[in-house]
Length: 192
Image 1 (cartoon, rainbow, N blue to C red):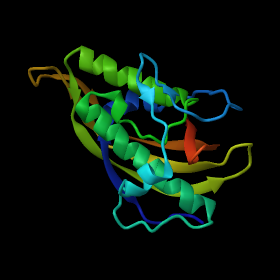
Image 2 (image 1 turned 180 degrees about the vertical axis):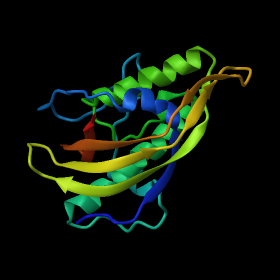
Image 3 (image 1 turned 90 degrees about the horizontal axis):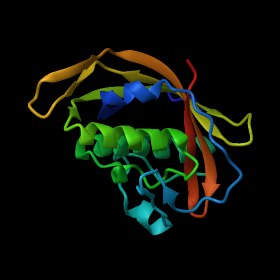
Image 4 (image 1 turned 45 degrees about the horizontal axis):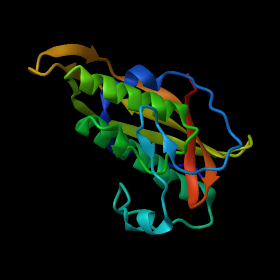
């Protein structure tokens, strides 16, 4: 099943600095709570917690047996939570669907902390996810999609522009693995 419509979400464009990095995680471990480094916890989740969390689009029905239908809301939730983490300057805001092996997620958490420690913030831009495809060719299922990042900027504490960020379009792969309470993000890779 291919998603033909575009999904729009708000996210920090400062993630572009890390977004193009290709990372390799390690696997084969049972998914439980862990940390994103510097003692930022990866929360353990329950089905009740996820059921009480509204879908990012507000219109998505409950997952069916179709694997892509189960994984897409997790990917969407991740980008919504990433925006919240950047806005709050708090990596603990990252999705509770992040698995302990997600190296990219740890790098995002580190980047968020460094921006906050410097007294800076990112202005938010909207991005679009399109052309979503399910891939089951490896040991772990993944979604392959196009991420459209708009232009944005990073500001110092006084509102002065520190960095202008150009718009770019990237091809991404988000891999998943089964945790105790369902699917979690194993890692995110750039395909460019």
